[in-house]
Length: 385
Image: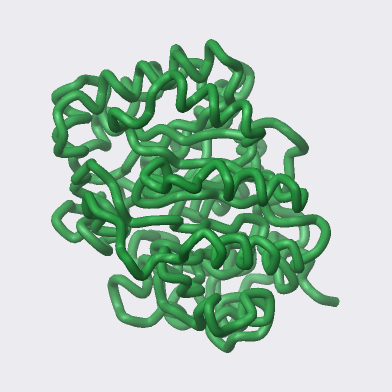
């Protein structure tokens, strides 16, 4: 019987890095963004053609996240949104907290019919947040955008980087996220790619402690109207499953996605099983120059939309197929009884070892090599990538 959680025909989320232009200089930027647009990025006509091909994935259509860089640096952003919506594609946008993110821009995004935006908050004070973003004023601008979005009824997700610089501040950030009225809080566990190489990841032991905190927090947060998610930390699924088996309160974390350095998912809607979703399996990334990759953190090109059929690449390219076969993973991830449900961060495995099928070094779990389990048949309801 095929595993129902392998998304071999269509992804749930497609992240299109519309540009790498951005007026911030964030210390963890995956894209190593720069102020000016790359002349090689997909132009408007090519963008329309890409959207047509994405619609060919068929129903249910993937959710499209327009990310960057800063999508607001593209003059044709609203034309691209309109074209996607005409094709029936749901769209979220990941703007940067720059002077371009005005109240008028937020209202225009809402009027364009997008589902959500994402905003990044990496500190509970201006000093802490702006130190990560490397531009003074981004903290106040982020809070202002959040209050405007709430006022106009535009759902927003708050993304927070998890690294040694931010981990002790997370409880205070959580309280702020609740007060802002966010639909989601997504914890982005650092993958040392791009400018992120200058930051220090948390240790596996600290990550395990944090994920247990998240699992215990999520149910309380949900009752307050906040969905808590993780990105590049699928170990949360194992922890929730273990807590479930011990008859402890089960964290319920809804299926989501996230942009740029945080890709917003679709706030609201039906809770879905997120088991098995990871880079290349349910997730697809298209770079500013059209390269087709498993994710923005696992930027291994397997084709280019200018010359290749993105639908065919996702379904049949060898790397994508390998990423959907966790029994082929090596090291602890390959022998782990949770490899279908979790599978580890493929991006972190690649960053650490050069092998996208290798073991995720952030995980502390020792697999029960000979224990049969039915975890993959009845997973906990979580979102963790």
